[in-house]
Length: 436
Image 1 (cartoon, helix red, strand yellow):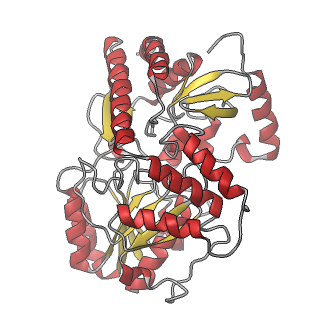
Image 2: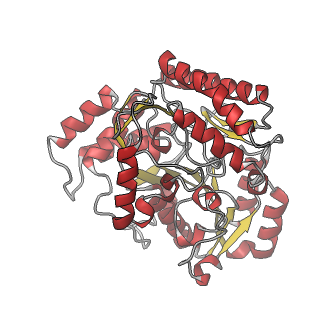
């Protein structure tokens, strides 16, 4: 990034935005409160590059928090969107595109049917309602640090944005909702067994991120996923796997089917991000007997005016169809190149850190021991990350603006993008080490 292009327009925009939008942003982590400085307002993006309103160019390691697996403005996706939009933006009726996308998802995953919605939050909210309707029970088990959208019942010890702002919960969530949620430490089967021993006949479902990415990437320990499957089945509760983040990114099927996954079959799975190709689209799915509880066939009501939007489903279908084995190979190669370069630079600067993985998703935790749960993630040096983030941004690399997030790459990250990153790393590592 050239010093000839200051951030004056971004600074002016955030000031104005704060007068018309709370905090000046429409999703809290974008406000840069955790890292300091001026949020960059992006005008355009192509391939692995972002261009802000001041004309600065950045290598993108956010990738819209995962969806841009092919890179920005991929020609196949752009063509599909233009063709669909030319026929109309929204119909309020069934369309061919939504059937095609649902068929693609069912073919790649262990679900029999899916219902399309417009956001990951909506998908998890609907999956919980379905689980309660199917079991006749009310309680839900979740893990501290796992984020499943801003659903009242699940917005407790949720990681990500809440962890960034050091808020253990959210105002506006009634006690009656939170009281139906049992929050346990991740990777602790003993705690799960104890909770089910006490409340098993009241628990409708246990929901978990397939591989958590919202407290940073924290893989399940060997045997943990199998244990969850056995315990929920024993007590007649449903197992819900949240693949909004990992779905179709960790592999063609998501975390399910990934090389480092136990590949257990959940009762319900939620999807999002990659399956929308950058548009608002998500889904939840499962066994046919469970999905039959949904209206219009069953008594569990769920609806959405823009669910299965023809333009969004066209983008999602084109994205999934372009995610070939070569794409996944490129993602793995690029991610490891970047992570190894970051680790090398931090090691040379004497900065304690550990890198953890979920397919091509990874996190760099600023602590010297592996992270097994939210309590571990909370002990990292977030101030050091903030200095590292700021230096990377000043050198033209846009990381996620929180120490509690995964880093994402795309298949479009080429040699020029990698060179920009590797050139930026020594100064950023030195900045991270500066106040040790």
